[in-house]
Amino acid sequence: MTYTEDSFDEKTIKNVEEVYRIENPDTMDWLNIDGLHEVDIIETIGNHFDLHPLVMEDILNPGQRPKVEVYDNYIFIILKMLYFNEEKQEVTAEQVSIVLGKGFVISFQETVGDVFDSVRGRLRTPKTRVRRHGSDYLTYALMDAVVDNYFLVLEKFGEDIDDIEDELTAEPTQHTLEQIHKLKREVMYLRKSIWPLREVASSFDREESNLVKDHTHTYLRDLYDNIIQLIETIETYRDTLSGMVDLYLSSISNKMNQVMQVLTIIATIFIPLTFIAGIYGMNFQYMPELAHRWGYPMVILVMIMVTVVMLLYFRKKDWF
Image (cartoon, rainbow, N blue to C red; front, side):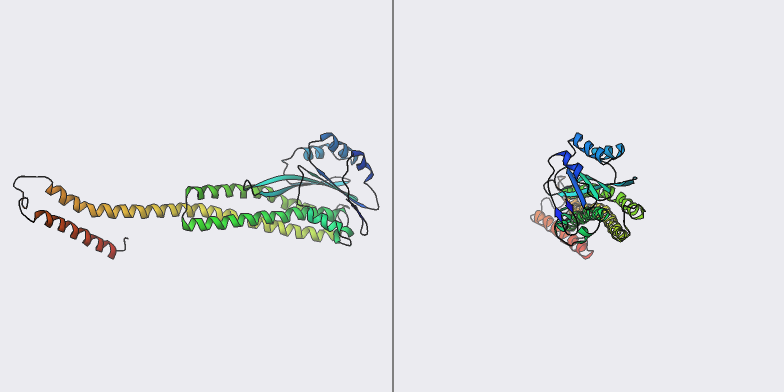
């Protein structure tokens, strides 16, 4: 994308030689590269813009920690772009590398697809703020789009946590515990990706490079505040999930206690009944009541009365 406040041009570059013509002192240029598999092309672009070999190594090797590095003619930034995969029900991450230079911004992505559609829409609209300002503001806009998408991911986590809380209070199962542990892993992954971003935004804001204009620092401080809010939300989710594990164990323990209470009551009721049945099951020849006509009904009646009395007693004690 090549633009000024009053003009705009967007095209897909089919030949790497076209990159050599994008640097125009009268325009702003944003070069977005999807995919890192064509190493030769990326190295050619890096050599054209005089990128440091270590910068090229970080670009071509995803999995780097979010960071910002300042060089003489450009600023290099690494971010993690996060998505929530609805099919797999998990968070996926993609490294985004941004090179901020005088009059240009280059962004490198691992795959096709990103969260920059809002930025592109603003660039296509005349007289917008991003069209009026320079490459530093465009870099801020890209970072802000990445951070805004973090809120959407966290919103999905919040919904999942609410569902698990309802399940915990209703009928917790082993699957509930598995879901809690899965969410804990995802939240820790989010924390690992977002926590270093605080230092990135802070360092970018404190940077006194001539590539960062004074008016952009206000927006960078707002970006920093949003990142702090994200971190606080993640910490809240992490504490909530830890509490859910305790709640699950407590629920399972209470459920087991209820089962044991019922079994204990049943066993307690049958103890005297077994005692009576055991006595009259000894079959001695001269035992009382063995030859009595109403002996058997009387013993059954006594056993029923014992059961009723014990049940009434348990009820009075609120044992069931």
